[in-house]
Amino acid sequence: MSRPPTPKLVTKATLVTVSHAIERAALAAAEDGPMLVVAFFQRLPYFERERQVYERIANSAAITVLGLVADNAPDLPAGTHLVPLGENEAYAREWTVLVLTPRFGAVLEAYDREQVDGSAQTLESGRLFDASWSFRRDDALHKALSVQAAVADRLSPGARDAFAGVLSYVRDVPAGAGETRADAVLDLLVERTERVGTELARARRLGATPDGSPVSDPDEVRRWSGTGGVTASGTLPVAMLAVRVPAPHQLPEQAGRRTGALRNEGLIAVLSGVLRDMDRITRLGENDFLLMLPALAFDDTVKLSHRLHADLANAAAHNPFLAGTAHMVVLSTRQRPFPEGRILEALAWAEREGVPVARLD
Image 1: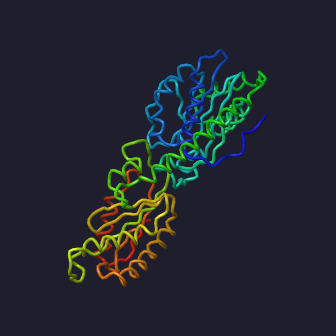
Image 2: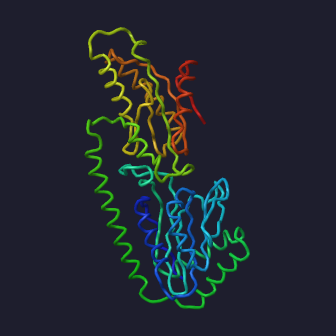
Image 3: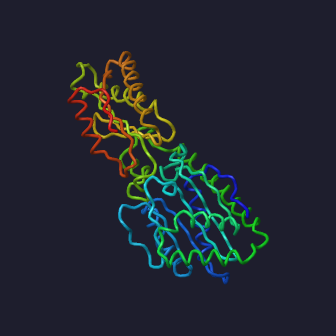
């Protein structure tokens, strides 16, 4: 029996194309025996986007198995069978789409790296996975056997029997010749999808903000973080580093109309100077800034807060309009939308108590 190829590091945007290709294959009319379909979506919001597709698939498949992490049993289409996934088990980080019949097989297997491609325009499209895919029947059979061994006890007796029945049919029929040709076609499509995505991202970055400011407005943050779109709590961790600087009236009185502008320019230069390509900065208020740092470890974010304190002090030594002090809050969140209310409460507490860096573990 063959095995899927060595995993490649690819973005979610590319995997969506592969996933849709396999789902389209499941929907194609064919007289090739009973069909097994398995799809692990990680979280319910990702399935909801494809609900209508799987309603149609369930109408023609012998069995359709869906794996999800969900607090409560979700309302799924008739004919589908739920495999409830634990928050911390390996399958919770896996994106799998599998179609298997006696004459055909296709499989996508992707493992969430909980990292993001810095060139992507949104957190979701830039999520990185170790992924492999194949249009070879025996590769799909190998994965189906693995899934059966791991989760069959979470299915009803009827679903287990249907799952085993398809596998029995498949084992009785030899794989067809020429499957490597389908793999070659898919590999070419994936390669071109990645290339086009990279070129588009580069073009968008060149014209990202009309005024050239590194500070994203609320609408841009919502678009980038996926709020209002297809995203889900519980997946990609994003470090939050909130900064509250003294209000202008708290600074020594300075002459000149440009006091406010010079203060803001100095602040933004310091704060944006620590950002990576995938990071964003926005305002939470006149004197509050929020740095959003995907996949940055909590301890590294604490270290970054100390670096910012030092950078602000150094900048203030050369800019009389800039305060050299600040209060900061550090946390790591998997929540969508981001917990801005909690962050503002913590900033107010840090300022009131005179805490330089408050940690929200």
